[in-house]
Amino acid sequence: MSPLQSVIYKKKKSIKPIWLMRQAGRYLPEFRKIRKKNADFTKLCLNAQKIKEITLQPIKRYDLDAAIIFSDILMVPYGLDQSVKFKKNFGPSLGPISLNQIKEYPKLQFKKNLDSIYKSINLVKNDSLISKKDLIGFVGGPWTLLIYMLNKNSPKKKLKKILSDKPLILDMIKYISVFLEQHIKYQIKSGVDIIQIFDSWAGLVKEKDLEDFIYSPTKKLVKFTKSVNKPCICFPRNIKNYYEYIKIVKPNVISIDYNVNPEKIVKKINIPVQGGMDPKVLLTNKKNLEKVANHYLNIFENHPYIFNLGHGVLPQTDPDMVDYLIKIIKKFNGKSS
Ligand code: 1CP
Image (cartoon, rainbow, N blue to C red; front, side, top):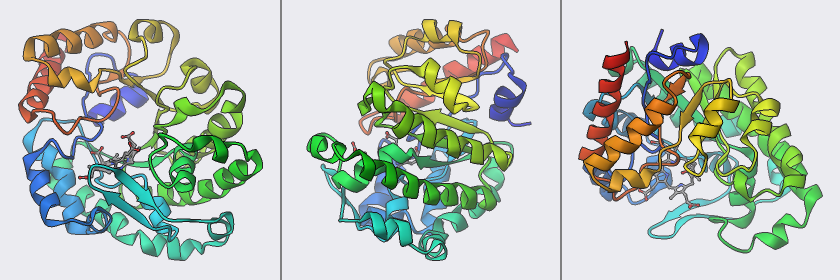
């Protein structure tokens, strides 16, 4: 059994596997080289050969325990024919989309639009580099996707007006979820071993709306993933109540952000935990990195734990620091097994 799956299914405590959110990305010179030649990020996310190459870049460099397929949560709106562009130093920029367009969009066409992603999963899965490792597929949480699809870019402003129309939000979440389930289904059919749900903007939801906007729709996606015999990791970034989330949504693993107190979590939570360390620690120095990484390892020593960060690797990270982090984790594993 792979390292991640032994933590997830066997609750193994003697090994702390490691992978990193955004492990394939802009901090790697080999990624920047490809990116420079591929100005259109959406197109790059549809090039099966390039997806494979980028997904495997961090696996070639480091002794990581899992690969995550190189893609983006916004490929689902792209699959629904919403225009999705990634602007330099601005982030994503989406075109208009209506509730009816989502509601009536043909499922077969959606699959066709994203077929190169499924093809790339198949290519990666069959590569000997990850024969003993897991391949992670992912979707955005329905809420986080809704925010991008309605707001048309990063939810830094203009949110109030959109959020005042609760019936529209509920309908959007309902119909987006249909396609998220499809996307999970085809990723699994193509070879991913684990699904992670990135709900990066879960922290924006008010307490009174958590059930409708987060818990209930995410619970359905987790249930679906489990029904096809794959585990589901959930990352509801900045959510106020992780305990309630776990109780209702029932993920196999909870991925925590860096604002969560790991000492409190470890006492209260009985499912495997992933992540937590602030990615900014990788911008400091080796001594500090060793101190903070070991702090997390020691807290979770007697708990099933997958080492990861509390959010993605930052673009300005030195690849040598990532190398050092992985060595720290492997050294800890060597001591305890
Ligand atoms: O300009 C570039 O080179 C593109 C930068 C980039 C990259 C490398 C974007 C644009 N997306 C990605 C890849 C990506 N996105 C992965 C790859 C797999 C891996 O982890 O290695 C994954 C899992 C994502 C998921 C994603 N996209 C999330 C959820 C995780 C998170 O970071 O919170 C979100 C919110 C997005 C939207 C998005 N895509 C890209 C950017 C810059 C953003 C965030 C913009 C914002 O702040 O709103």
